Each structure stands twice: as C-alpha cells, then as structure tokens.
Image 1 (tube, rainbow, N blue to C red):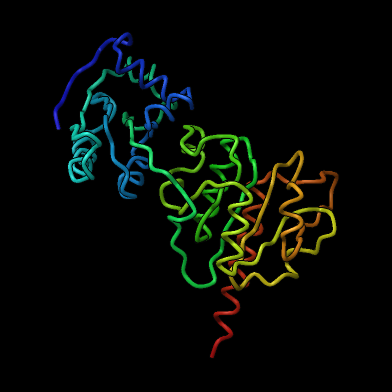
Image 2: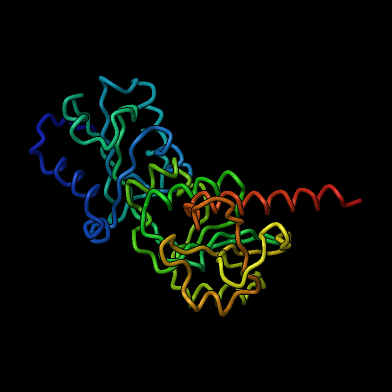
Length: 281
C-alpha cells in the first residue's frame, strides 16, 4: 500500500472525492462511494468492502488509528484490475474542506460499491424484515437501518428507491448500519414475489382498513412494509398484504416519521418474539 501526500484542493484526486460525495450519478459511473469516520470505516471494512483510497489527516488522526485501518485494507479482497490501494495524507486545512463532518477522526475513504440484491439475502427461520417503498430522504433511510440493526432485524429491503444506498447522508445517519445490516434494493413487484415465495407474511403500515399493530402476531416470518409520510404505500402493497396495521394517533398529527414508526413496529416484533421464547418449556 503506497503512500502519497496532497496539499492542494485543486488536485484531481481531491476533486474526485468531493464529486463522489455530491453526485449519485458519478458514484454509479465510478462504482465508488465515500465513507467518512473511523467507526463507519471499520464497520465497512469488517463487512468485506474494499477501499481504493484512504485519505488520512495525521494532524487529526492518531498514527496508530491510521495504521490499524491500513492493516485492515491490506487484508481486504483485491481491487478490480489488480490496482493497489493508496494512502493519501492531507493537512488539516484540506481535510476541513473535504470532510462532510468536522468530527470524523481525520479519515475518509473511497470504497468499491457492492450490489445489494434479493438473491444475496440469507435468512434464518422466522425472519424479521423491514420493507421501505420509495422513501426519498436518505436521513430517514439511514435512521431506519440503524433501528433495524439495533433490533436485530434480518434484512431491510428498499423498493423503488429514490435515493441511492451509498448516499453520504444515509451512511452517516445509519452510523454504519448500512454495512452491518443485510440490505437489498428491488422493485415492489420483485419484493412481493420474493416474500411470498419464502413464506413471509406481509404487514403493511397504513391508516385505512387496518388493525392496531400490537394485536397482530409478528412471531413468524414477517415483513413490515412502510411508505412515504406524504403518500403512504401504493395499491400493489395494499392488495398483496396479509394484514394491515397501524400505530394509534392520539394527538393532532396523522402520521409519524417513517424512522420512528419503524422503530416502534420493530420493537413490538422483538417483544413478541422474546415473550414467545420465554413461554417455551
């Protein structure tokens, strides 16, 4: 792993790093995305992703932390085309211009994208899955992934995504859960077929024609499906659902943020499953 030093914001490698952060089109073209921060980067590498370039600021990041990350990069899978990963050292003034956040331990990396498909999901018995249809805000997606990871969900499926799964805001909001939680992207039609073929019940979160969520059994294979706050779910999900569930609204709002709703429903499933486990002889 060779080492370089860059001090100018006009350097092409710095410009590419900034563009990868800002432009989803370029991320798709280059098959690259950006991870910022020690915690997120460690989770990314531990999940088997490959780093092409590590930008490190020795004025901010401790030398032992840089070396620990470099050690993980040296043991990663080979890069496409036989390229070698590069460590680029940058000064603090330049790091401040490239970092999305100011408190990320002086580490930013360019990482190779991995496709996330339904075929790649490996599920155990009675899986618990969150399905999100056309959720647009990357911060909401990231927060749902964080809750899914905390609740031990088996997978999160993003249907008809309006933001890419490697958006920097999504990665930041998930605190790296995008790497530790099984995820997939697919159309609603593909996901419905996949769920039904795997015997997983579909519970759609909706206000119309629905039952209170805590009255519904979630101990078997369950997919909790949610849409956007503004328009909810499309008809294809309503028609293919096994049950419709709702969270009671006792105040003035008629809906909750999707990440809050996901956390409530996930932990109800966890509560039911733990209760069932305790009742077994």
